[in-house]
Length: 207
Image (cartoon, rainbow, N blue to C red; front, side):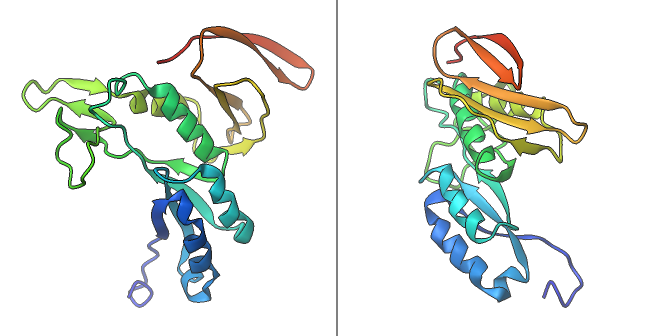
C-alpha cells in the first residue's frame, strides 16, 4: 500500500531486544523485506549491544537505531544515574547505532500515563499537581551526548582499559573531534592521548 500510494515511509524492523539479533538477520535475509526495510530498531533490556555486530556483519548497509530504554521512577537513583545511562548510550553508539531515543519523554510523579506493566519514569517528570519539572539521570546523559554530537557525525575507534570509564569518539561533519566520557568510579585523573598529543583530565564521580 505504501508503494501503491507513492509513499517513501521508512520501516524499521524488530523494535525489540538485542538478544533477538537472529530474528533481525533472518528478516533482512528476505529480499521482499529488504526491498522496503533498511533499518533495525533495538531495545537494551535483554542481551548486550555487541549483538548488533552480528546483524551488521551479515548486512553492513543496514542502519541501526537504539529506540527504547527508560529509567524506573521508583529507583532511588532515578534522578542521578546519568553515568549508567552514559554507559548504555556509549555501548549503543560503539556498536553501530546511529540514533538514541528515550522512553518515555515526560510522565508524572507516578509514572503515568503508562500502558505497560513496568514502573517507567520519563526523561523528565512533570508533577501532576504542582507542574514542577524534574530531570532524570537519563535526561542528563542525553544532554551530555547531544551537547557535542552533531547530526551526521561518524564514530572513530577509541581504546582504553580504565575500569568503569566508558568512552566513545566521534567526528562531526565540521571536522571537530569529540570524546564523550562516562565515569562511574571515584574522582580521578586520566590521560587522554591522540597521536603524540596528550592531556590529563580530572573526572568527578557521577552517582
